[in-house]
Image (tube, rainbow, N blue to C red; front, top):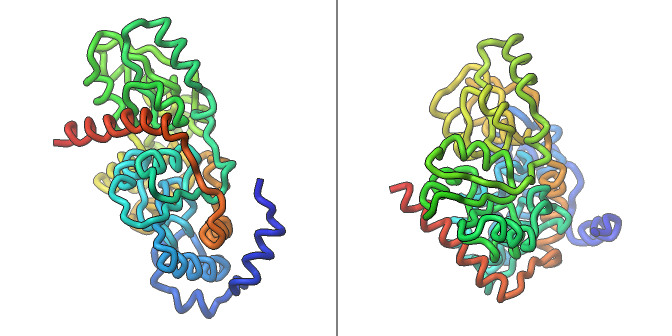
Length: 350
């Protein structure tokens, strides 16, 4: 666990991190990327950290990969690459910098290390976990294989390296249906997200999809009645749900897709008002690019994603702490599953 007092003392010795409206004014170009959701006084608190992090990246030959669920000051202020789990996995294979700072949750940092065993991978807070990753183990995969002999195992990328190593191929919410359809045999095992698996089963009726009973603490909270109630009050709102939501919720939505799919949909359709049934920061991060769209609630925050802050990013880069390691033998087997996912995704895209 991070010692916040020691962390802040260390940073205070090396950087002037006092809020500065003067610096905020000087960094208007950065603030412009997030001005609809971050006021200038708030940006004055972030500006010293953003400046320090961006300078330190160059000094240390580092790159920041940030998930779409990061807060706007991270997403727009310091990230070099942003995207969903698939996009970040693909970009991780192209990294030239010696150090990767993963702004997301732990399994994402493990994936970057799996794909870049010779590079340094840092995660600003080692406790940034994931309810899905914690819901399945390699032993759980073995149980599913015993129950359905011969069936291929498609594991969500939201899993530990050990689970990836025990699987045949990984998937993300953006490519799950296509990867399941590409598997041989009539039965396909999906772990660990039961709702993603059930939504995929409806898209791929030619396969018998069986699943592990895990779920995302953000998306499992939504109900179909929530959506019906909101639509009754605001019938002109376009409701867009993530496929980690229960099938009854997805059925009530106007569109369902991965985080990148949601961004593409809103960008393409330009609805006057949109409700994103997913993690809260998604709407914040695309609001400035789409000023004509009014984003409305409700939304749920991921407590794990929100463990990543500018302060922790700066400390991790400054000290080189919170480094992620993966056992080389496990990494080698997990790499096969991840690389197979990337290869199939590229074939699907053609």
